[in-house]
Image 1 (cartoon, rainbow, N blue to C red):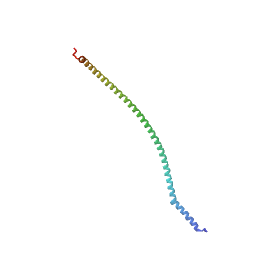
Image 2: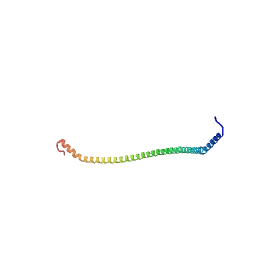
Image 3: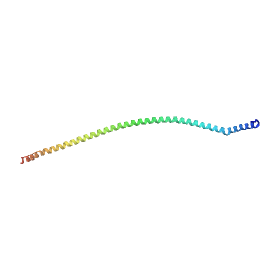
Image 4: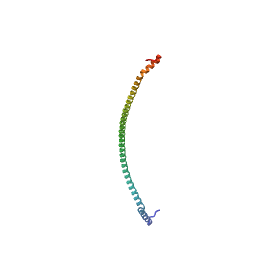
Length: 142
């Protein structure tokens, strides 16, 4: 059975002193460290939220700039394609004119050569006719 005497009060005082000392030496510093850590975590969470908002803003900006760059690239590609088509058409027209000029020069040269050949053949026609008649008749024709 439990006797209530002065040792009970000594144990109670000892317990309270021990709780007070443990609170001062151990529990209070641990609680302060936990509060400080919790404050840092809250600060980090605020930084994370701010960085996420900045990230979303930057992503939107990058997406917008990328879209604009693609749009500009498409317009430049189309303008270059049109310039290329125009250059091709002008080159083809120039080549066509050069070919037509060369063709008319060659055609004129051929006509001139044919006229010369006709003139030469006309000059030789009489002698050919006489030699042919001589071969058919077997005698000299005058």
